[in-house]
Image 1 (cartoon, rainbow, N blue to C red):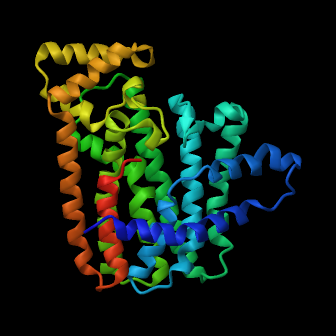
Image 2: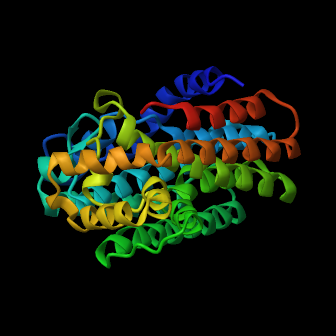
Image 3: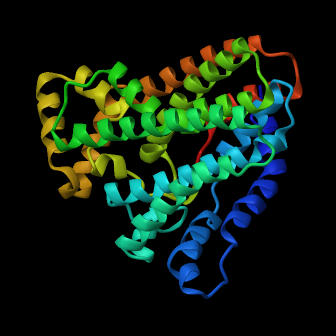
Length: 340
């Protein structure tokens, strides 16, 4: 299945999503203090771009079970605001400098305003769902429950990702990484948008479970590809700081594999380099990357991601044949092959 179908779907729905996102923020006069210090800060961040994957996934998930995609638009936008908050806060935690080809929000606007803007984006999430006149109360409660689950799992995953680095934890397995990645990225980038789209579209239990399973595998593959791009990607394409994960000594799947596969001397050297944290010199970062290639850790991660996508496609057989199901299959390839 070609990635083109999903790329075309994104191009079709993105203008609709962008308009709705801006509408949620166009509630105070431009130039007013609230616009300068809050609404405009979030509007500028949202306006930088982004693929709008999560609203689009909610919409196509709704379509795949026979629903009208526009009914899932508000909830999809709620997830996009959650995503914006996660990025703003994550950049602060990681000490990142570049996001979407521009300086991170905490650098442009200062730490206090950036934190507050991320908090505001989180506050919008449930408000948007509660005020959605297109959903009945029962569906709203189901969607809010899914959002609560998404929030908890995301924060759990982030806690593990940050905690492993803080406490110098190295006995992390591939399964540990997959659990962390499912939480940190998998729920809000795949599982939850599809589950919410399915709930809004009136899915059967089997259809909803199939979409959740498809989303789980696809989103973990998405995170693995994200980690790979941080090492082998192009900064102009990704719009992020390359090798930032190496600088921060993140326990990515590649690093975990390399620690386990390396000879004792190389394992000791890799651990020593990781313990340097953000004080690493460029040549020390290159040394880590060279080890990841030498021990096949890059290819290991690629193959694992491919396997996840192959398994993900099997779950789509539970859905009725439709153009939306074809778009989902294309989405799986997009997650695996994207370069940004």
